[in-house]
Image 1 (cartoon, helix red, strand yellow):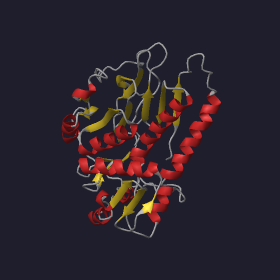
Image 2 (spheres, rainbow, N blue to C red):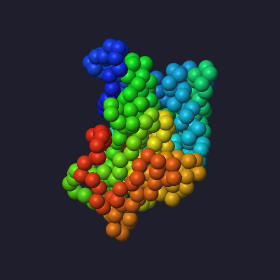
Image 3 (cartoon, helix red, strand yellow):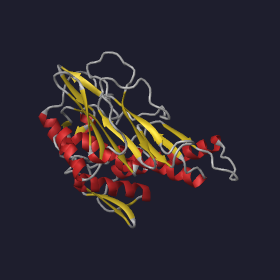
Image 4 (cartoon, rainbow, N blue to C red):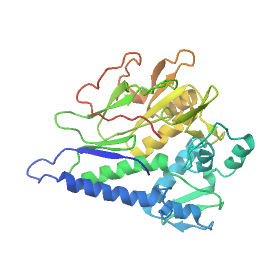
Length: 341
């Protein structure tokens, strides 16, 4: 999945023997390698790549992990009216955010966008759990579950650490965090949510915190386009594509963070809410009782405003973006969710 990982765990209490960090790291790496062999779209021999290139529209047996992610992805796609769509790959590639990176200043034409959109439709990708299988109704269809698979991987690492005897832990896969239990001497884990950098900034300024959140078993994911975008003329184009329009998501929303018991869900929901936008996304989150923090940028002043949903407030009290703390308050971890998705 082309990303990094980290894990922090509390040693089991006596009389249980302590865990060897090197051995734990080896097992984590092995589990991630197994998941990479399922979900990678960069490896031609991965399970998903083989499904994407298969010349059949019949049901194809797949691993339980791939089936679970595909079913959950399709459910979220239906719930959001297609704002989230795992088949959006042709549009991502067209805009230069796929494996072949964009060069030059030429934008896709309306005809090119329409042709790519014709290959995008989550309804043409079916999934079932028993027996686990996928089916595509169009041979040109391809799936990319990156927006959910990274969070799913964090969930799987959490399950692994608990099975190894370390139920108190925090794991990070890319920008997605999954917690379990609590650290020593504290009732919960603490993590920071960054203020998105200004799109006009010519230098990489130190990140500042918008707020911190406390987590005890929950996951945290952030979606935004501040770290992966390009500008043509005076218009900025981010890497998060709206499958409904075929174009990069536009609007004043700078980032959205989601807290959820499942990291697979928090990761995918954050992407969906960003596509829905500042207003529709916020109303969707409130309707479905989602814990989400929307950071909105004023078009005239570039000032940031924090807009938490009702369910988010129990995890954090948003700070004022104009004067964020220089460092996270103790016992915050040096882990943030920058939304590089």
